[in-house]
Image 1 (cartoon, rainbow, N blue to C red):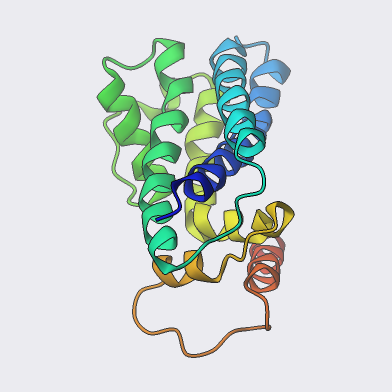
Image 2 (cartoon, rainbow, N blue to C red):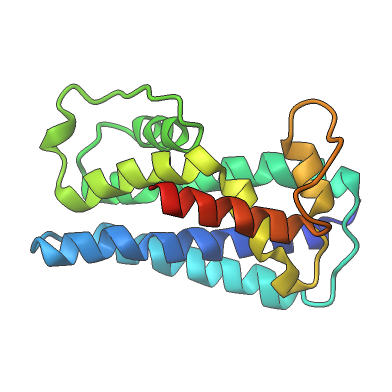
Amino acid sequence: MNFKTVFRVAGFTLLVEAAAMLLPMGVALYYGEDPSPFWKTIGIMVVLGMLSVFALRGQRKFFAREGFFSVGLIWVLSGVFGALPFWFSGQFGSYVDCFFETISGFTTTGSTILTVIEGLPLGLLFWRSFTHWLGGMGVLILTTALLPFLGINSTHLIRAESPGPVKSKLVPRASQSSKILYAIYLALT
């Protein structure tokens, strides 16, 4: 297994998630709330993501085994780092609660540990909602749309994420399919 490529893909996913956190940070700033839970998280994710992407440059071998391992790693890392704004805000009792809330969003489960959701600051409430929106289409589909920038074929990642047999594609390239799906998703939103 080529772990360098797997960690490079995971680092790239951290950068994508950090970019996504700019929106809720903007909401927090707009409403005069404390943006530090977001900028702290973004800082951590950008440093780790850049180290992974640039330190492991040149790694391009990506097969089914790496695809399956990447899927699991991306889900775990998305939850671990996506929970940090909740944790840094001090609004949650434990990190496990923060992690649960984030994974619930990314998997669109809809479960929550919160009794009064509206009690959250608006920036955090936006992040919570945004995790559901991102999860609706799939964090991994977003990643596959952007993987060609690293020179990595994302077909194995899509196969690992898709349930059942994959018989046909929208277009010949997986990244094109992902971009088309996100364009439709954005238009419907």
